Image (cartoon, rainbow, N blue to C red; front, side, top):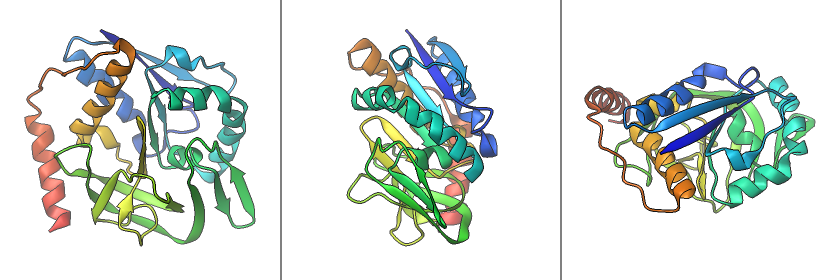
Length: 239
């Protein structure tokens, strides 16, 4: 088995080590004998989403988001088809915001992709803290770090998780991130996946099942160090 991971615009969207998510997916596949190809795309590159099994959109500053949003809107149709056809996406912070309808920054409204019906508004003060979530996607707590000025409102969509510690989407709802089909949007940096191996495996499993059109059970990895690190962070902040 093999998968292709598309990393969109890493020269602009790679805040807080989001590239580490790629390394984690690649390594956990290699440990299982799954061949991985990673393709990095620049703004000028054409993207054939039919050739991709997982897409990563990382985080970036407001300025970088404005630059990327213009390009993404040019390829909105093919990205939309990929998502609706159960394409796997992990979108972090700025990448998460870009999946929605818009990002309101003072008097400037960034037109986002509208792939999922939600929106983000910049509010006074930043939400900066460690994060611990309870998520339906895994049995382990989801842990990481958030740093965002935007408040995201997801309506009736499924959140990535319930906040046990931290601020989450807006600091008030008690929820963090979004899950839509095989898409995860989240504010968790750090990067997310090395600290949360079960989420990494969820993405890999969904990608393989979509590609090979059959149920996939991944080879179990020991994950002793990963579990101990996750447990330490969760117990430190959620008690």
